[in-house]
Image (cartoon, rainbow, N blue to C red):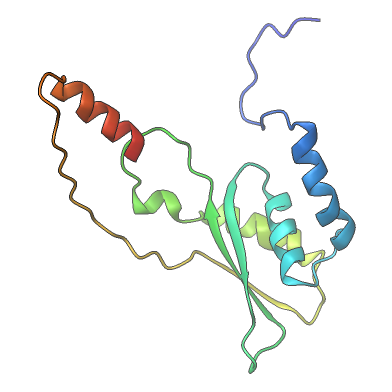
Amino acid sequence: MTNRIGASGGLDAENLETAKLRVPHFLRSLGRAVTAADFEYLAVQAAPGQIGRVYALRPPLTAPRQVKLLVIPSVPRLGGFLVPESLEPQDDLREQIISYLDDRRLISTVLDVQQPYYQWVQTEIRIRVTPGENVERVRLAVEAKLF
């Protein structure tokens, strides 16, 4: 059988080692969102390939049934600067996570899906090139390492 048209979307094939790492999470949660780890694991399962990181904050003592998920969407590595908008989860991604977790959480749990607060930093880098080296090649190599 031959695939005459290249596939698009979807995910890369998962190797055996990655699958082995997922098994303990699956067995622990059994598809239910109870602990912070359950919420994190199931949020990623809600939108495969669309979430770079997710973190469940510990609920405050005044609202013990509240679960706040901080979601960072996956960003393709295209090189260059990251723009802040690329790190904001889109509304449809939030809705997808909420919808998926609503069927798996306790009815008394209040779920809040947000983006984290980012502290942006700026750096200035000066490089001294060894005499005889190609300055442009060194500049491109440094930028490739940074981005």
